[in-house]
Image 1 (spheres, rainbow, N blue to C red):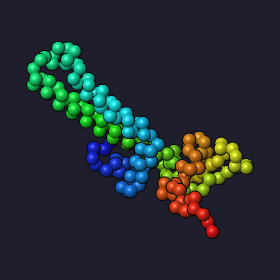
Image 2: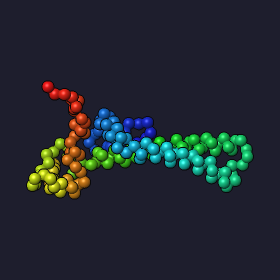
Image 3: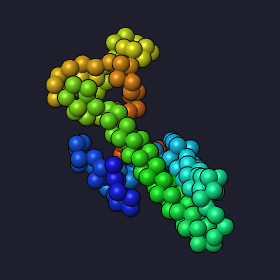
Image 4: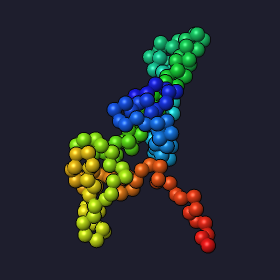
Length: 170
């Protein structure tokens, strides 16, 4: 897990060294594909934890009527909100980016399968008949068994839409 306000690419020492640009692309991809889990849930859980910090002492009678106790509970609620929000945000980002990084890896040797050619048996319409052969260990894996699609094997830099897409070609 990473420390808040530090680059996320320092969180993956067991993988190939991710550059900051690659990590930023993965984070942007995760934020667009999982907006509710990464963008909405951390503040909601943070607000609930802040409310709990104030309501639990108030319900149990430990808050009292003193202004100092109310001020301390308010500061604690804001601190709990910020801490829980940042911690949950970082954990969820780490979790989903890790899932994207590990998505196209050989289960045996953990070598990246991105950029490798897909072997198709038959007419190519059956998704269970698409294979990829790991160049490191030589094993042949079904894409269906790995839970990946041919798009996952395209390197991340090449997944975008071409710049001339939609333009009239003369």
